[in-house]
Amino acid sequence: MKEKLILDVDTGIDDAIGILLAVKSKKFDILGITTVNGNVSLDQATINTCKILDLLNSNSIPVVKGASTPLLREPFFEHRIHGEDGLGGALKDTDVTHPVSDGFAPDFLINSILSFPGEVTLVFTGPLTNLALAIKKCPQITKHVKEVIFMGGVVKGGGNVTPTSEFNSYVDPEAVKIVLHAGFQSLTQVGLDVTRQALLTKDHIKLLSDKKIADYIDQSTSDYQQKYNARYGVHACAMHDPLAVAIALNKELVQTEWHYVDIETRSELCDGQLVCDFQNRLNKQANLLVSLEVDNEAFFKMFIDILNGHFEERE
Image 1 (cartoon, rainbow, N blue to C red):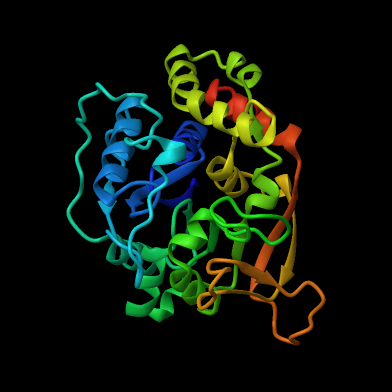
Image 2 (cartoon, helix red, strand yellow):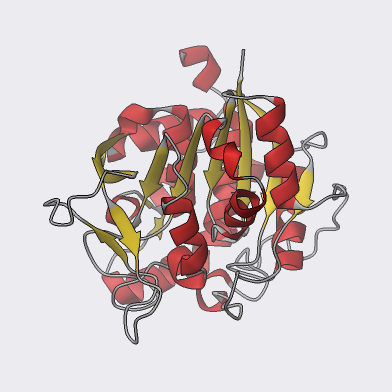
């Protein structure tokens, strides 16, 4: 049986590639894709999600809209990296045909988890607002979800919005705090520490045999790669969100450790910073499985195999 999965996205460039990876893997029963304010507005993230599902001809996957703002803060968009439309200008002239389902994402999360206790994996590639709202409404979901994987934060290294904070955690740190302290039995963090090790280059794109997908990825990441090169001296696109999806497919791609982790929410300079107690100075029980290293070669082999349609055959 396929593993039941819900993706929660703020669909920008890398979220979209994560959706491609999840759908093309054919390893998941995708119960739905929920959207949230983050890289772009809620409405734009929803449109972008529908565009990617149209690209894949995946008309049966429900798309459910969620929170339009962070819990307490004003929205903070990342148009500088993802473009005004969130997809780097790709698919800008494409009409959307995929329907948006009725409902509210936090309720969809709750109902799905309680309908399939112990079976649902949640992968979050945007701010954790929808999950925090679901926890506040129905705290018992933490005991019934199979696992939660989220892309967010950085525990070793600098941020990508402030010197200390990663975008998703910076946008809604109060939501992250709720999630960290909710009592999940399996909660995995995928941060900039590891996603910056997984860099998509033009050479990887050339290995993709599906011209439609290859052209889309090439176009959507083009400006991103130029900006990444200007800052880091490498012409590439960091695979932040696809790596979170990949971990749901294969846990062995990353090296992880359990630690106690909290997040700063009341700092003049460091709001959104994840603080990982590597030395157990606080003497608190570990609450997060922290990703520290990634097998980059294995990740990209799997990534290319899946997008080329060979993953099922190899498995």
